[in-house]
Length: 235
Image (cartoon, rainbow, N blue to C red; front, side, top):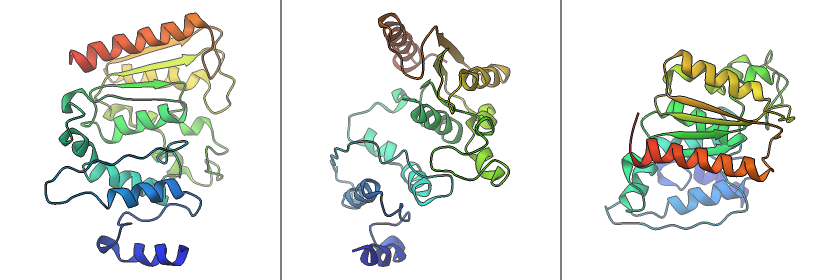
């Protein structure tokens, strides 16, 4: 089976895996590409559903097979395909995430600034030089792979972000990769470049938010942010 998949990937545009292959263990991302290869290309609507125990879009380092597949998903107008299905309003698509999802949110806003009306990033890591001895599946240090650390740091691309970004972080975040300094520095970079941003720090909260007051506070902040920048289209 592995040999067959690799042989098909070599065929490029004639196969299902035009963007390349993920790691052998990432069957979810491989299956997602398989489903996308079944979509109509003659203007007819295609509806695809997939249920996974985790997102196939969160794996891989910069330049990896997974990273190149994500680039392909964005560049091949799959956001526009969602709009064409009638389930999304083009000017009102927001993006958000927690932890690594927040990191991805900031990266997408920096490198695909026209796709989203606003973003919400909770307890993320935005400057990879602050985690110099590795992150996620990246085992090389900052000194061994400085280009990767720079490319994966949306903090260094804050000047490119156009959409308003709401940053939320627990003040007592003890996760070594997501110290509260990450959000403070990202907020400072955005404001320093005149961008629309808001920083919300939650007292006594760690990487996940547990107090009822904190959870309600976060929900209120996100609702107000989306109401202002997504529904009403301010900014």
